[in-house]
Each structure stands twice: as C-alpha cells, then as structure tokens.
Image 1 (cartoon, rainbow, N blue to C red):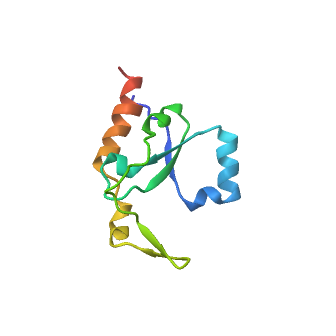
Image 2: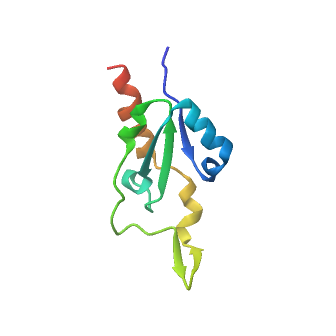
Length: 108
C-alpha cells in the first residue's frame, strides 16, 4: 500500500487560532516555497505543512525577474495584476517535484 505524508497548503486559515493549535499539537513540518520556481508565471509563495519532514525538499528560493508580481502597490493601496486570476492553478512541475522529491524516495 502506498503511503504518502499528509501535505496541506496553507492560506489565511493558518492564522486562525484553532489551525495554529492543531499544527502545534501534531508536530507538523512547515516549509515555504515559491511556485515561480516550478514554472508559474508569478513568484507566489506558498506555505506547506506536513506530518512528514520530506516536505522541506520542496523549498526553493524566490525566483528573480522576469516574473511578474501578482499585486502592485500605489499610494499605499494594492491592486491585482492581470495574472492574479490564473495564479490559483499550480504548475505541473510542482506536482512532479512533490512526487519525485517527497514520495518516491520512501520507496526507492
């Protein structure tokens, strides 16, 4: 039977007290990575939490230009760039990296 560590992508919900409490009680591993490093059109960082330390293998540094930010600041206000609408899709390279870096090493 194939067993894969649980991986959650965090968003604002992690800032909720009960989510923080669950994370602290389960002793999960947290890693931050950048979808732009996996081929996304914008840098977009994501936080991952897992019951497996293998999730740290997905860490990548923030990509440099020519990637476009998802939002721009003007006079203290932020507005979405045109790429914001498509940023919810994860690049296929991210999925492949998860399998190659986190899942397969357990079985090789």
